[in-house]
Image (cartoon, rainbow, N blue to C red; front, side, top):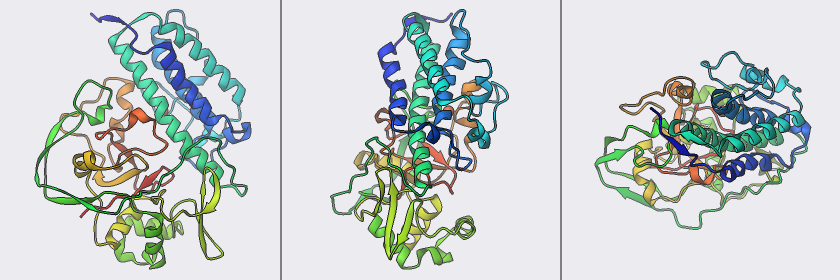
Length: 388
Ligand SMILES: [Fe+2]
């Protein structure tokens, strides 16, 4: 029998996280929220609705007595990838939905928020408290995705609009040094009772050889040197897939970079600007990170090296590409049903990034967190840390 407890998440905490999503979108115009410029960029309106659907589907519909869904079709419109839940609009077609309108989606948010707020005042099972926690962590992951997507939407139009939401990289003011880590057997994975994703569980041992890791990220000025010295023209530096990718897509610099009258400029959420040489280089693919490391005669750290070194690293500005494939840890177990689709089914053909970015919610930053993307992705806030 399930133990019933007072919800460990208060109504106030719940609504605070939900309102944060709306704050990110506050300076958008309705037209900005419907567009899907490329298949992997979802319309902001879709994020607003999908994060709401998550609570409606997994909490209210299944557990709140006499709950009436806001609109019966919304499960079809706003399910992302849960095959256990049913059919849905395919990902690449999210931008075709000019209806429901932004106002209807905001009404949907308010409706689900009020039902959730009421629901949180009652005792719930421990398992259900965990699902609500997942819903909030999920919402915060979408807050980060929203920022990537808004940047893509704004950064690919001639007027380069600004987002009225503070998000800034800081320069590393310290000299570059390489931190030495001794060879040995180390524990990897999450321990303790605080929240983590299933992909961090399965604490296990790995053997690491001696290695060294940089105490800071690669900067824009260092990356410009790589470009200017022909880094994008030397196939010897690249993976075969990476070389093909940059050839087919005419890539000669990170995303958002443009050379104007001989000067490198880039789009930031504060507008189109001259590149700040001291900031860490961002919006690079794994292929570019790898080629840059090759050019320096170094390499990217593995995710295990990164985790062990993390206690001594200053991280959290950009997700850091590692040279590790995204795979299950030993003893990884997938949860039953739809929630099991959250991480497990993506463990093929992707690479792990560690750390966090300036767009990441604060409580998501921990040494064991495993982010993952396909190697050619670069709209996320990704950067490069060298190892040797
Ligand atoms: Fe989602």
